Length: 455
Image 1 (cartoon, rainbow, N blue to C red):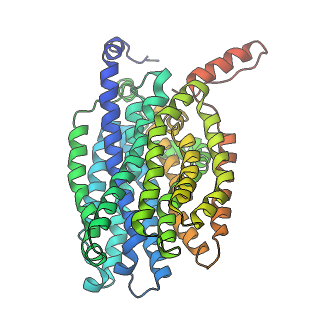
Image 2 (image 1 turned 60 degrees about the vertical axis):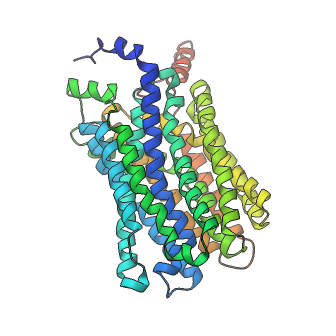
Image 3 (image 1 turned 120 degrees about the vertical axis):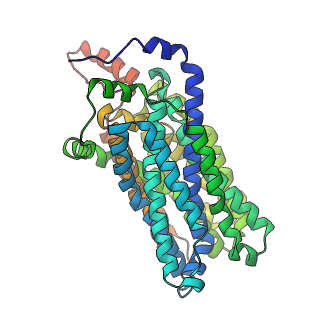
């Protein structure tokens, strides 16, 4: 059997520190831009898309319909992970980075150009659905390509840290999207914002996409994919291989990650709609509360990832799931106060549980899958979690909070998803190579054997 080529490894090791910083920066920037595109739609859905594109509905029904188009993006994400995963496993991780960014950017700019229902009738929400689907398709490929770019270049002992850079991208993208909407909301009248102001963040996505493509233009293919290509060990049908041999792992991955999505979108999307519509909190105030919590999440991500490199991925994921499980009722109670400081505390508590998990999944999820099917398996599992936890959460939470009393049903729903994730993480193995080797060494004395996960 042919062995992976080794002569080039010392040269890559010499240049690894500056190379890793450059690769991680390009990965973070691109992920931030793509998630900016995705999040700006969610914020617009919570604030203005209902009345503009579903005017014949009641306010509640209009918000539900707008969140319905929001959910279409999540349903498209697994399809995007299949499409771009096949490209990544057959032709390389680099084409995924460029193609997914271009598709998402073009679809986002187009959303900002769609006429409203008053102008073109039912064609308006239908166009929103199509463009939101294309957004989700592009984002479904982004995460796998960005994470593998850093994880497969990174030294083993720092893989969690470097692979956490793409995980910083989503909160940065969220802050960019909501910072722009917050600025427009604070400087424009309600009439101006509703008329044209909400379109500006979508148009800005075109400029950001061009910047991302420039940053990624010279990224190198990962060593592991080059080794697969040179030795002829690439998978001919990665999706088929994943479904036949790893379907249980994909389902466990999706279930495990679902609470992170559910909590994030409950905090950043549902709470915004609930606070502004039911509690009459000014949208500028609520956006500021959410952004403060998300900013702290972004800062903590690399720090938590270092703990994953030292103590393992799985323990942190179990702790994060448990934190989410116990915080959902306090989150709803604090949100219900309509006090800015208490609402920020409620949002922050939920996101702390999420970051404890998601800071390490950039290394954890790819390590669960062999390199020949890694782009497909990791991306499908990750985006399945988005469907389970992210697509339905704003819709279900809005429906459960439709009455006049405290929305305890939302807390029950989120706690249930947290319990599901806790069970799934308990059934997944540890993958940190150092931790796996240490356990295997300890087991030798008792005759036990443990296989290390593919690295």
